[in-house]
Length: 219
Image (tube, rainbow, N blue to C red; front, side):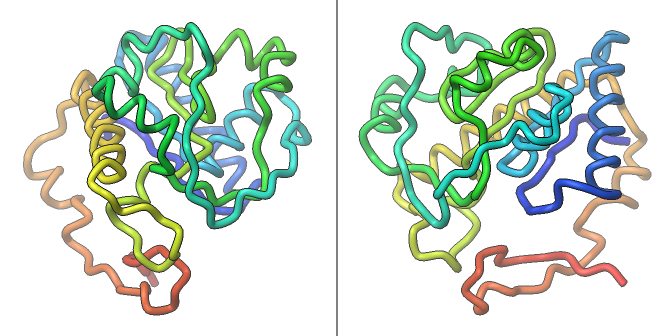
């Protein structure tokens, strides 16, 4: 019933979660190979898991001190942004990304451009843009940073909330939705209504000061 998949941030890199992500990733590739445009977004932990899966190396990640930090994005020179998430950004906003701290970093692990490019499996699968990669032959985009936090989380003091920062969140979200609209899957309206997240009530947790302002708790 879905038209795309989002791998969220988090911490689990082993066990059932890892195996589930591995299985879903295989299905994403299979659906695209079969002719159905089926996008995948991977954020922070999702980015890390994809590098582990594609490289077939569960120890490929490097340690980074990037906890609770707003940062710029320094783009790789001479990269073609046509057909990527960054194509939606105005030239002025793309320039501001490299000069203003408009995105949020919150991770202990990642992979440097050098290590990624040295790995033949990763370099043949992904094009590198910054701490963002996009697959060469699939609608798969991965962000080491957190594009979602600017508009939706207030528990961490360093999350940027300026107008430009909110535009970053909106452009990233709109690109994913535009990719999902290309999916051939068309479930019935009744099935959609029965399965929307709006059938459940979120719990506000922002006062704890740890982000994740709204969560869904299933028992």
